Image (tube, rainbow, N blue to C red; front, top):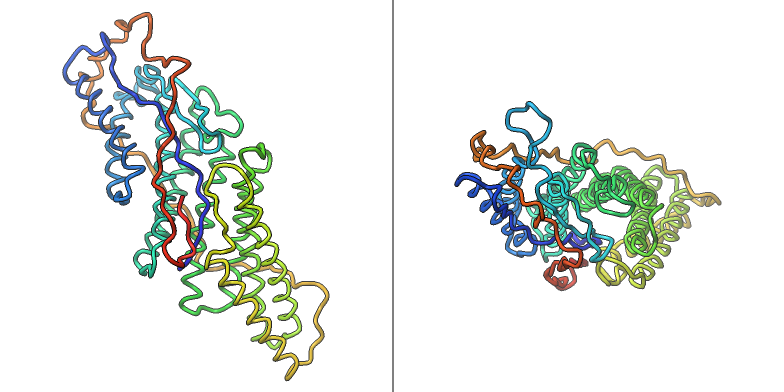
Length: 411
């Protein structure tokens, strides 16, 4: 399996001490704050740890989120939110906006931002695994599942948590619904790429492969459309990726649809379908070059040089030559001027996000623990607010180069 996926950078965040001098009045509250600080630091470390696996990530994320829930949800459910929701200011950068951070004094903002990074980690883990040489069937399933988990996290954030923000996200920021939706759709499309590769490997019917490729191309088109109103300065590179993948998988669809037509003795139409695949492949190749030259978040690579890309070119060329030979010897059919309409619907293999829920509030949170946070003792000069000049350091992500001839680049 050879894949290449575009990846935007991880979100960066300012350190949080969870020190509330005067407010914390008991050992149980003090322990909660210490555990929040250490579990947050541990989770941030794992984002760039190459040895981290999904089980480690889930355990670390659950540990932090279950503690953070006490800052968000009321324990007795008599009110809608915890009295601690607005005690701490959190600062995060965005995947497309460079190192210009957003800040909100709201634990819900922290929950969504950290959850967003967990989802990004799953996409990067999937990419890293897909780039291995001689990937096993179990590893391919792990890539597929990781992308579905990421899609589920993004979907849950968008539907259940971003509407709770007091300050809505600005245009082009990660927590804006359009941006999260683009991530959801991209994860689904990339997971379907794995399905397509498996279907080809197992020599499934060309009609099924064509339908899956067509649905995948539509996913990429939808994701690109979702980003269409964003500023090109920070969205152009990502959109080039989505556009080239749309052209690439439409070419796949026409290629395998051509095989289906040939099997039905419609050789003239098959040739026209393959010619359309050839045209779209050339367009995707041009977009690959433009992608490599476009500035913006994401890796600087030449996708057209990767094996995943070159392989389709050979399939299109060989299938077209086969159809032309058959037509010259057997069918003698006229080649239509218009390409066949693709009205393909896949009945199998379509990807749905894995449903996601944040863990329940940690058992460490009790009414006594919550009572040990006395907000009346907050200092008037609130030191939890960051200074305007406080810098958020970018995340140093591991520089992973593709292994020999895998056709995959991991950012």
